[in-house]
Length: 465
Ligand code: PLP
Image (cartoon, rainbow, N blue to C red; front, side, top):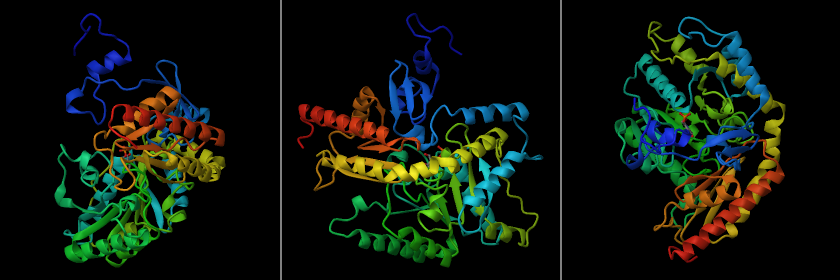
């Protein structure tokens, strides 16, 4: 309620933010008193900061602005839908765009995934999938089958259930979680596999660990496994070949639901609407999605659910059991309308383009491994990660300087590229419409940003690579 700040306090966005805005993922020491890079405009693969500087949007927002900024078709459809019907209650009524979108999405999903429950984003999609699993097992008369298997390096969201499954230590240090519901397995990260072990043997190790865990805990207590086909926020972790398929089989045999969290990997990031089937040969029981479904133009997410599971509910002995779960904005007409148009764009050329430029994107970025600070460049489709290490032998992250990603980001921003820094890693997942020429510019800037960072670290005596 504070008005007119002390003399000198600016009323521009930066001033207002530092007095009134709580940013996501803040540190206690600056909570409610922090400004971040102010972005004024977006156009195609670019965003423009408050100084009028144009930056390539390296992370596509948060892996979401897939068809790029300022797509008039998307803006228009949101306007038209809002003028026709801006909202209706999904409790007692329905709208046509959500039914049409459910059909289109189901048409792209693998196996018997035939139905969609819409949410407000990724966390609520994961939350919905997990609560559905709990409900399903209650109705099936097995209330003890509720534990959830997840993995190190995972990110599934910021709601209480979904966050309890996250595998990155930093997200737990100061936060509460439902430890009792989750069982954490090893991150499927080939780069950090035990020394001397082949990637194939590492895949075997992960599968054995999974099998042993199921045997130790008992399949009758495990409701679901949840995993990102490629772990995104964990650092673009591409798992060993066939590992996911083998996990899927163990789940099938033990009646453990396999949930593919495709919040990042769907809607073109790996060249398909869903990567589970087309890229990994999987038929999950549920797929969660968000982000790219609207290319970030509207907050929307959802869960694609197997016909078999719904049939199981309809045929159960408890037809009166209520799945007491729904959000005010479930099946939002504006979100669903923009998602339909976004699908038109993806199917009408953007997906094909993403598939076409992806090998070039990966190959150009891979050349950064020439730099001594870079331990590995890895990725798939149009998502990649440049991981910096103190030295390649030990693969130790830079111990004296864990914010190397932020340093690279600072240099790159000066040069015209926004990076997504993750401790010692830089994640690149640009809008899918990026051209080869723009990929060249992105990689050239990143190379220069890393070179300047190396120079800086040497000067400070922090690193001598
Ligand atoms: N799942 C995955 C794989 C994600 O990467 C994210 C967000 O980055 C989420 C879930 C949570 O999505 P949201 O931030 O839309 O709630």
